[in-house]
Length: 251
View (cartoon, helix red, strand yellow):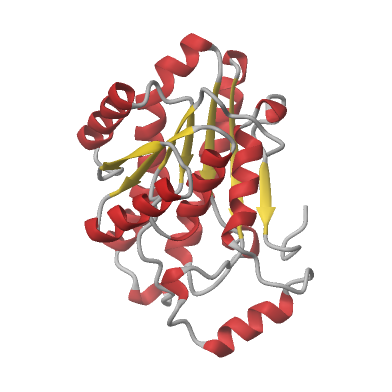
C-alpha cells in the first residue's frame, strides 16, 4: 500500500454493505483498525464483518443509528474502549434514495435526507472532535455524490441534502485546519453495488455510455480515494472534493 495508516483507528458509518465495505477494507489494508458500523440487517452485518476479518482486517463491529445523538455518543465510547480513540471518520451511511417528482415528496422524506447527510455528519464529528483537536491530527471524510454537480432529476431531496453536506465540509475544513484536522469529500458516481441489482438495464447502459473513461467504477476506486484522504500524504489537502466517476464531472 502506498499509504500507511498503522496505529490509526477509523470509523466508517454504514460499512457492512455497498461502497462502505470497500472503504473499510481499503483502510484496513493500509493498516488502520476499523470500526464497522451498521443499524439494520444484523445477519448481513455479521456476514460482512466475518468477510472483513477473513481478508485480514483488524477491527470490530458496532451497531448504532448514526442519526441519533445518544446512539452516536455510545458507539464512539465503545469504539474507544475496544479499539482506541477515533482518528479517521468516514461519513457514508445513507437511506434509500427514490427518484420522484417534487410533488410526490413530503417534508418527512426531505428531513430523512437531511438527517443522514447533515445531522449524522454533525453528530459523529462532534463526538470524535475533542480527541482529534487534542492530538492535532484528524481526518473527516464525507461521502457525497456527483448528483450535486450534475443537478440530477427528479431527485431534489437527495441532491439538496448532498449540497448541504458539501457546504458543511467546506466550512468545517476552514474551522479545523489550524488543529491539523482535514475535512474533505469523496464524490462517487453511479458505481453498482448490491442495492443496484434490480435497477433497469437500460438505465445502466445509458449511464455507462456517458462515462468518459469507458468503464464502470468499482467500489475499490472509492476506497482508494478515501485512503488517500486519510493518509499523512494528504495533510495539506482540506476542503476539497475528489470525484470518483471516470470523468462524468470535471472541475
